[in-house]
Amino acid sequence: MSLLLSFEVWFIAALLLVALDVMLGLDFILLSFGIGAAVTGSSLLLKDALPMPFTGSWEALLTFFAVFSLLILVPLRRWTKKPAAGQDDTDINKY
Image: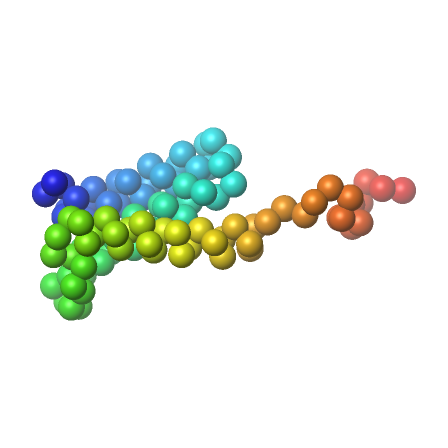
């Protein structure tokens, strides 16, 4: 479990999650978890400069990752929501 306390692992996980979301087209679900992993890795990188209580144990770190990722997921889904069929009247191909 000491690997979870390494910021490099979190940055690699962030890159993999973002790449998987782009390749598979999962409507930004994995993107939010990639952002959460990047923020978690950044907090581990800066833990000596800034006092962050959740960087001490892997349980607290995983909890922070999960909560932050879900907090990013909700506004990201609303922001990237596709319009329902028939609601978009600005199609340039309609004559």
